[in-house]
Image 1 (cartoon, protein in one colour):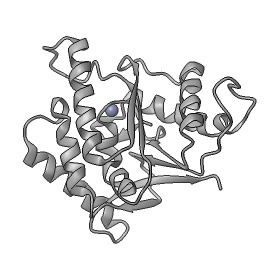
Image 2 (image 1 turned 180 degrees about the vertical axis):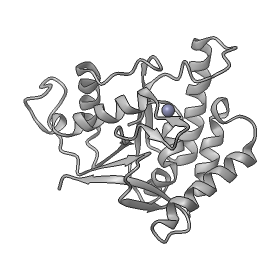
Image 3 (image 1 turned 90 degrees about the horizontal axis):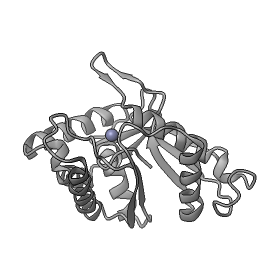
Image 4 (image 1 turned 30 degrees about the vertical axis):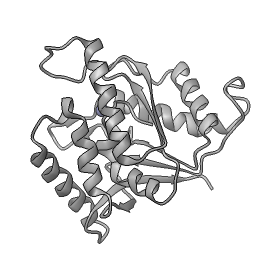
Length: 221
Ligand SMILES: [Zn+2]
């Protein structure tokens, strides 16, 4: 469960592809439509949403996910509201996942040059709230389906990683999936390849792996 159409590919595509290869049924739930995902403008927001939906379709095929969907909220306007939590609880109770993956909302600053996007932080908190305790309790959102307790939450984009997933068999597909999001990563495929592999090597170095994605992991069972 992520904010923007390319967030899973940036954050955890290697892990999702490996889990899919191992037989897991992977569903992507994206909250925002991607309508403000260009710094230079020059395209109608409604057209950009169409372009990004096509990119997400292509990336999902590469990763082998079972399904992907977009809740269609406007970029930059995703807040951790009761309404969003109810929608996320509805998806959790319908899909009944063992593991939910999202972004760590407590990560605000990455170094001195990047502030974590508002939507990432909002979705991260909304997902945490939806999983613990709302989805598991019949007293929360009783019309959103039968209760479901997720077993674990994996948080990417974290400053406090405590678990690492080996993506050595799927890093090629992470690169391929990310390059599907051409509106976001541009035309320089070699640069995407280099950045993805450098980050995977860096994450893996902390865990003795050649190639990894790092997470902060919560277990509920
Ligand atoms: Zn994003």
